[in-house]
Length: 101
Image (cartoon, rainbow, N blue to C red):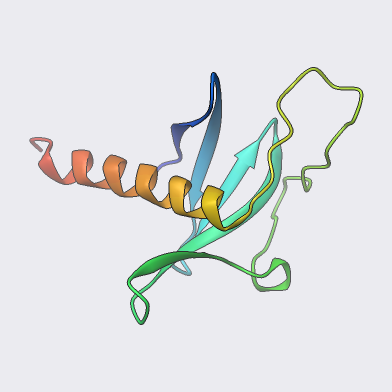
């Protein structure tokens, strides 16, 4: 599966994240060219969860580091963000399933 973009809103602000599907069943979340984290769907809990940092590979990409002096939105992968990202991933995957081949 090819990488795709999602938009996640926070109040009046919205950020674009690139989602990079991995063959291991999780999705890397890319923000400003760095790995912000990874998420996966847990069938046991029927919900999305964050993949612990040691359990996924960054590959050729650096890990994302917050810059306090940056004018971009500081993005933190908390439980709420993971759920929101998961919902957006599900929406894109549903759209792909519905598209004609």
